[in-house]
Length: 138
Image (cartoon, rainbow, N blue to C red; front, side, top):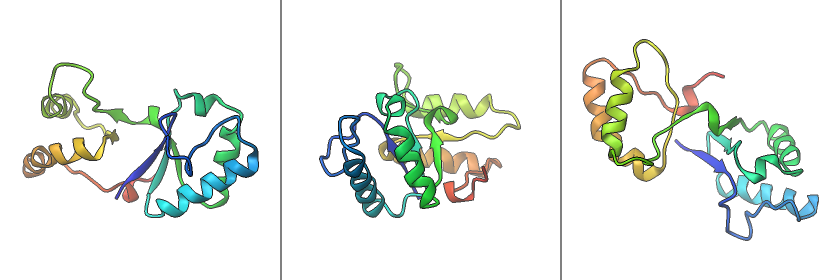
């Protein structure tokens, strides 16, 4: 399962969502995105992006809502982006050791997720539970 991130880094012309485009072009891009990534469990809006602050954000949100597609904000997730010198497994390990009884929603790239799979298997053995995004209740 996966979620699709909507941010300023969308370069593919068919998927481009630009404030300078007319609404009809935005709607076509959204339809193309939805069709190409129809298996996405959620769409995640980068709420620190120019796209999110633009006048097309309400158009995008309304179109996704109309199609009953769940839209979440990137800020709702903990991100394991490797901005520090620590490797991803060390950051993940530290995060889980300090978690306690809380729930945590993590946003990661496919590459990061693959790197974390062995670490997740180790934590499952000691009682941690990792669930698929489709099982998360809003």
